[in-house]
Image (cartoon, rainbow over all chains, first blue to last red; front, side, top):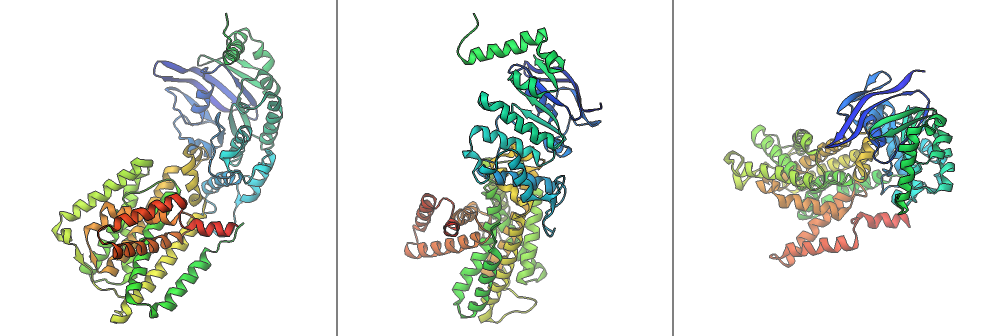
Length: 269
Length: 311
């Protein structure tokens, strides 16, 4: 299968700290890829470099054969790579519905539709529906219909997370990067929410990369796993293979256990 | 979707001015015209305020518009109100377009102070320039309309009608702009610029466009004020003038394109009454009015109407 996204030799340092230390990854079209690794392993830096938020010090990123390394986030978004955030980035003073309409407005504008001189109501490209219907449909797919008229700042954490992801869907992304889609969600709800997200996302036919700390979620939803450690990918393959890899067990999953212990206030002896 | 009654209300206001104008005293027509001139500036400030930006230097474009009208009258003997307003808007828009490349990079206090600094540079330039009348300013020719110089009794009326037409058209255009995807982006820019960029939109471009529109409106208002007062001076670019425009905008609120005109009218009224009652301490009354407003109507006067509609 052809790679839709190809990152080669990505390096990024913040002062003395190397957040990316030679990341190589080719992502196949329509695949679902889980990114695992302890905090600081380079997962979010990887996502930030792909989406143009950070420019790598060295290395190139190609998307469908085009070099996107130097492009701005908005250009990359327009090309079809969208992302959600670890901490939801919403328009806090607007309702869930208005949040969606702002996003749809951006899509219309990029297609030069609905401008000052245009007449009538344009259909949203990719969805072929009027703006209001697109907003309603995506909100429904993410189970957000009941929250439609509530301000984003008063929504519960999990709902904010879902709205953050729903916002990425208005642009019909070809690649979707989800940064910890289930963080802040209770363990019981994780699978249900992930199920809903994947169903909604796959209905649109996007390639998905998601960062996740829960290995059960990873093994259930990812087709392929990239394990990050110290700014590098130390294992790359099917979930069963990667999660049983010795180095991954020691540095990533072991690290995760260590992290949980730290959160619970227990240190390893 | 909620039906937009803005057009209807604007039409009614225009009709009222046209119909009642001949029966109103000249001083009231003068106050109305000045309110329209200032309302145009406040309308532009409202656009910026919706995106979370406060320009402390909108008097820059007000002054550019006024001096453009003055130059047209003195240099080219063009005294047509509408032509002067158009020219004032065009020159101010050009200035805003050029300066916008710089200002659209800044937010918050930096945007405010940079705009203030630019307006004070213009003030300084005019004060030092004898050809522009220095601190004394220049007199502007009495207005004409479509080549006709109205008789003494009709001058104020014809100017207020021309101003009302121009004001209503400007308000309608801005109202339509607010409904375009670019116009709707304003509250999103105010809330979360990162998300705006990650939706494929450019916050900087959107702000630049708003800044040019705001500049054009201020220029239009300045030209109208120049021809109405019959005199221009560098005070029009002074920072206190900018402060008054911000006062009107906050007084009005950002709820409707009609609000800035109402804000300008009420500002004029508060100013006149306060000045009448206590000529030496009128600023204090103005300050008290603003304080009361921020305490009791933080979303501006327009929230009174919006609230009533909601219930």
